[in-house]
Image 1 (cartoon, protein in one colour):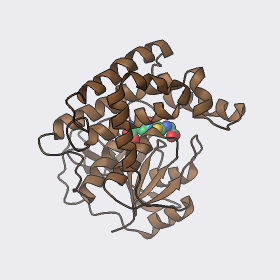
Image 2 (cartoon, protein in one colour; image 1 turned 90 degrees about the horizontal axis):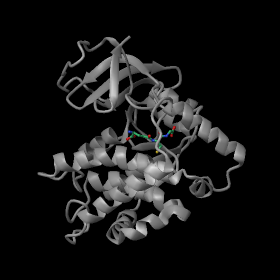
Image 3 (cartoon, helix red, strand yellow; image 1 turned 180 degrees about the vertical axis):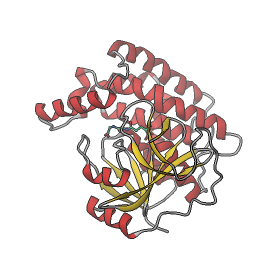
Image 4 (cartoon, rainbow, N blue to C red; image 1 turned 30 degrees about the vertical axis):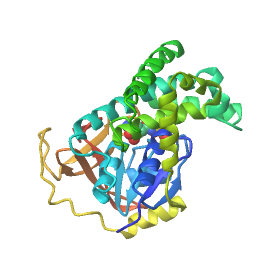
Length: 309
Ligand SMILES: N[C@@H](CCC(=O)N[C@@H](CS)C(=O)NCC(=O)O)C(=O)O
């Protein structure tokens, strides 16, 4: 099987979600560190436009969004399941809440002036300004949460998670972690790193103990490779055969047509290519890049929009 390559950077919460899933599944992986802000020419050579973090590459297949990345890792390694039987619907729905509501409250809470030095250790004012300008452009018209509103909702969310642990279970939905734990963990991980503001977790001691258990899972074995090598691997590989996936047309667009796929919320950079998968949960395009050769870029249906070009 081709190597799992994660394109990510250390301080990314969504990347931490995938790193801990890799740790839980004991899957060894290759690490490519991407820039935190645009431009990201090496990543874009693979994705064709998608710039969010993380992205997972397996040969010439490029997987965008941690919801899809989690599904692919589950298919590769079903033991230590992220979606145990009878918990699949609940765990996925809770994970979706965590990746959206919990995440954005945590981000708005941490990005108060008191949190900034811990988020950007050693970065110059100029670099911080560049980061803020990059994220403003990326979020465009997406509404922002004020610090007071974020603090209020975050305190409630953390209490609700803490309540889920009140029956004495080690993880949110029982004795083993599910996708709900990994998705709830990454915002809590980010709060814990934002040291002057991490005290909010002292009010939820069961959640704090849970965060320590999640941290103990670790990231398993990783080896750093450079972006150039990852692009060579894509060019030298053949994408997976997707022809057996059931075609489910919800857009009136046939396989083979030229489409643009992009997120529905922020970083609305379209990825243009030939539609090659429209299955129950996934959309994918085939595109050819000067450097990466022919690749398939995969997206989950939820959170993405597709238009005919
Ligand atoms: N729904 C996406 C969200 C990913 C996301 O927003 N990641 C942040 C970093 S934690 C990001 O992309 N920031 C901008 C960037 O890294 O360019 C997912 O699950 O992968």
